[in-house]
Length: 226
Ligand code: ADP
Ligand code: MG
Image (tube, rainbow, N blue to C red; front, top):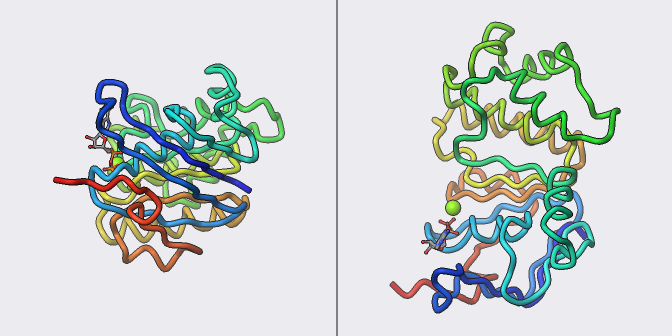
């Protein structure tokens, strides 16, 4: 099992009377590709942060790769995340003044497994498959288009070959063409590496790429009442 939630509740510490998440059970199998959708403000990003151990639940258990996140201390959770979980956000994935190769190398240096350590030449080759030229690979990423930046973000998130990739509305700032290039590159890398994918989006036109489509309202018993 990749992810397993049991009786998880969560509210932000500054608003203890406003529960955001109450999930009795939710699980994701290894290699499964899950599309999660729901209204803005519904708690999708909060749930993803719980899954990656950035936030801790008030009650309940979160198992990721059969490890109970609640039984780890902060340092152990950070290490676990660095080794097993990749993340792609809607924006600000990259360090803008570093180039693509440097951004990817920066992520790659955290791997303990030397077989997963890539040199500049290898990284440039991967960048080519994502339609990033040598010239663009050595320019500050802040100067590249959003489409290019999001494709570089895929490589950055996947370079250490995580077991799970979490993507939080990664295509919402992309136009149709860039969205398609992003999705095909992402799905190819996922299938090559047998990664479990948890993908949040409100763009249901992407849903056909996934094994499972989950609505947050159906798994989370907290509903917005405004
Ligand atoms: P979604 O990703 O589905 O749009 P979020 O998980 O970002 O939803 O937010 C869920 C709810 O939690 C919203 O009402 C939001 O205002 C609130 N929220 C998000 N982050 C914080 C925070 N750091 N502190 C307090 N409330 C927050
Ligand atoms: Mg969100």
